[in-house]
Image (cartoon, rainbow, N blue to C red; front, top):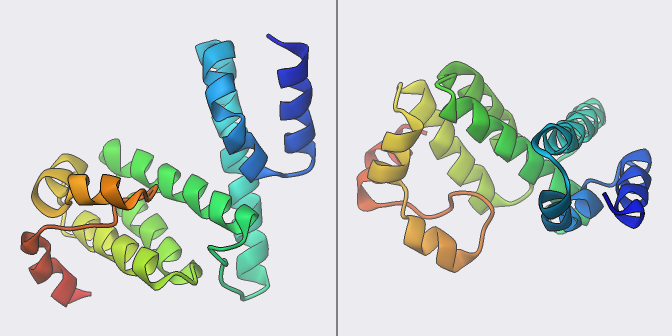
Length: 160
């Protein structure tokens, strides 16, 4: 492992700088073994959960134009998707509900509310992606989250 990468990762970790850890992500993938990489992502999640707690205690929303808030929301979204992917639909729904309420970005909040509803309805992540999501439009939008949906998602949207 490159000493400079290790130093940059440790500096970002000690400063609680989730955004910098995401900037170093590709280099970490190229350098770290699977165990170290798993620890790298666990650290991002720990920092994100810490920032979430601070945000909830302060009764504020996360500003998606602020780099650390954006990176925190991204990490928490990835955590929710991991739960969803693992079939832990109730946990995923709860996490998506928190995400929908904590962001100042209306489009993100509506999208995560749709994720939440699908998980609560018992829909698998694969079915959500195949039947509700518009992956091509999401990729074109360049968002880190599923942000575009098929017409079939309308019924679920009306339940929100």
